[in-house]
Length: 451
Image 1 (cartoon, rainbow, N blue to C red):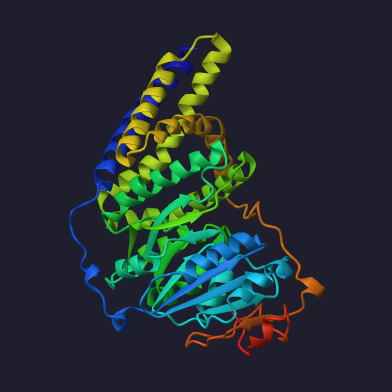
Image 2: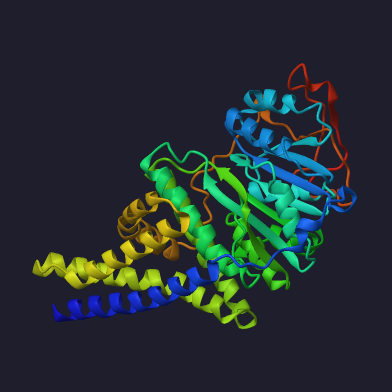
């Protein structure tokens, strides 16, 4: 039994040391600097880059999609803006048709309907290969972006060395449940500690999918690698945001974070969907961490500490927790040392977050420690043991109404220099009326890239 006590004590002590150093340096580097950006001097609309906003959607709630598109249509960007809404083989086309029709007269909007569900990554690529803007902004269909997001991200991308930039994420349904409140705080910490510190060195390791902007010239260099990701010989199509970010860094581009470009996204309000999401993200993180290890010698030493802290830290915490629980179960001895350290570190971290955010609600983030130990750590362990599993867990293939024939319908089409025909999604293309307002519905000979 002394072995259990010793193991727990050593593991939690090493974890405390590693986590304290990691978090302290992270918060230090995450503090805002006083260096002003020259990007604010840009006022000439002709000099602003053109931006293509891509919104992939699959069985999205019409109200949610409508709110997303409204926020995009309300952008105050002075440059050229195009919006590509890609329906990824949804089964609720009749329900979302009125949402499409609401923007059918807006020349900035184009709609691409894929004949079958191919996944978010390929839906994005379908629009990327049809569009032609200097910059590409990916926005999830359940996300609302502030009116100045395009402007602020485009200004962040003025340096040609920057290949990608992300905005700050919040939970649009924060007030729904205790879980959504926790996730909203989790997002704040991830953005304003982790990403902000990484951005100090131009190497944000994951430009999050709900709102991330990319340089087209960089995207075109990486598109084939992005589309054909494999893991242990099997296609890997989730974790697209992290994988694309790592590819950008490998290609020598910087990745940045713009804290004033705020996007609100819908987060899980129940534990089941939340844990399934975390399982998918954990698999993606482990897969791309192996890829990112090759980058570390070229990056600042802090990034090495960050990778070690994020991966070795949870392992030490899990080992300490398991041995402490075994000690309690077998000897009825309370592992006071492990409990005291975990509680102390939780209080300190939540207090620092509350001070930085100027919001007392972050003291309630202490509940996340229990969720982390008893739910998230087992999920991450399971993810590590099932890395080859590529199930989305939350996606169900949808069938188009009327049999879903071989079809690509593009409304308000804009052919760009990159509009090329690819395999899989192409085929017989025909006109299909969605509603009375579909008089501007046209068909296109060019097919999008497919499966």
